[in-house]
Structure formats: C-alpha cells, structure tokens
Length: 188
Image (cartoon, rainbow, N blue to C red; front, side, top):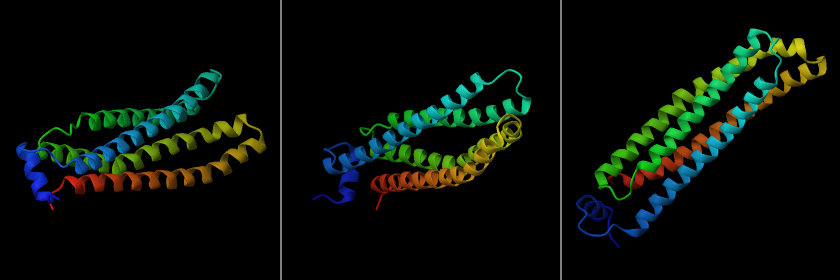
C-alpha cells in the first residue's frame, strides 16, 4: 500500500495513476455534499413557493407591514436558494483530474466559503426571516381569530427552536464531511 506522500507525489506529477481508493473516497464525499446542497435547495424552494403563494392569495388591502414582512421572508429564503445553487455549481466545477495542488486549493476555497456562509450569513438570513415574521404579527392579530392568532404565535416559538436545531445539526454534518474531504486532500 502506498503512503499518502507517494499518492500526493503521483497526483501532483501525474506520472502514475492515483490510488483508486482515495479517489473513490473523495468522490463519494463530494457527491454527498452535492446531494446535501440539492436537498437544501429543494426545501428552500418549497418554502419560498409557499410564501409566494401566501403573497399571491392575500388581498390588496393588506397593510404595508404585511408586505414588508412577507418580502423579508421571501427575500431571505430566495437569497439562500441562490447561494445554494452557486455553491452546488462551484462544487461541480472542482475536477478530480486536476493536479493535487489545484484540487487542494479548490477544496480549501470551497471549505472556507462554506464556513463563512454558515457562521456569518446563515445567522443574518435567519434574523431577517424571523424579523419578517415578527412584522407580520400585528396583521395576524387583526385578521385571524383569537384562537388562530394565539396558535400561530405560540407554535412559532417551537418551530423557530426546532428550525435552529435542525439547521445546526445539518451544518455540523456538512462541516464533518468538509473536514474529512479537507483532511484527505491535505499534506499529512
């Protein structure tokens, strides 16, 4: 069995074939990340479609605050959809047949940009989304029965908490996959 340095040298020099097991492991991790991005995009598109449906079905006499809140929610989800599509395309453009240095550099850039997305932009997007929801609350109070207004307000808290834990879990899972991929392409 070859050492990692031998694999690295053969990859960077392209003199001999790369270890198939390493390529298969890297390829599997990249495919898992692509699938994860596609699933995230599908869920976000469904959410955006639901919000747009609410916007279309609402009467034109709704207060401005309703539209502002809904546009904040749609905008934050729409922005995240675009970002996920861009990241899926970035990941698809990283070719395994590149030299070792180019591949490692591309993985590092992808890894760092995903970390920035998760640590900086995801919290901002969530704050904008929930700010939009909070802006909608006075409209809900005016237009919903007392029971449905209370139900909406009370159920939004566990939904928000559940959403945070769900997002956190999937970010950690993606981070683990990215770490493995980064370790597999790093010099030991």
